[in-house]
Image 1 (cartoon, one colour):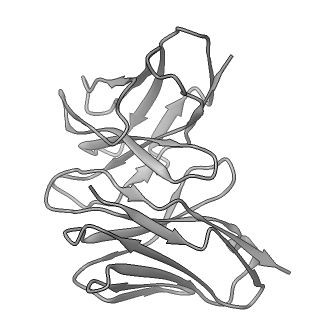
Image 2 (spheres, one colour):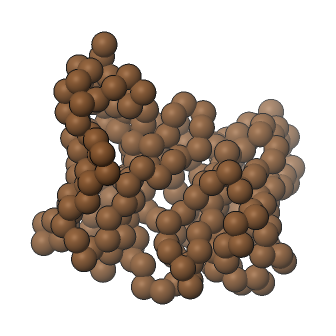
Length: 114
Length: 114
């Protein structure tokens, strides 16, 4: 999992602002994922992608958008439509669809609203 | 969709004793069940996983059991040590060749009392 990086570590969002969280991996994985974690809660799936230029909505996609222009990168944008964005955001990758399903996580980005 | 319930939410055990965390899932198609350990402010780390073609898997002090009929699986930690203190998450997914995301339980805070 050391091959997955996220930046920044902390991010502050003002009212009405869109912010973008970065996720990069050098594991040569095809599949990438975004999860949201709230205090005392499990992780919930926002979006996932199994190939470049393709992605699917997860359970809580409203107010978020993603792109997958490169295999190594899967940025997440938190839009102003997301009314409660304060959370810990975790990116993950796996060798699916051709390899094992084990998901490895990045170190996370903590998003706070000013 | 899949729903994963995890119990207990907090578990306190004496150092050296065993700890058991239980999860149930709702989708009988799920066939991959990982367990993650998360220390405060850190990324989740995979500690063990099991696929539906086996009933039990062990790795040193950690074991996972799966009952497909009852749709539940459990994590067993023996000879607990202070470094086992963390939040543990179970998860489930259908691994059918695609890259679907995981559905997580809400976590168990394991406290090892010295």
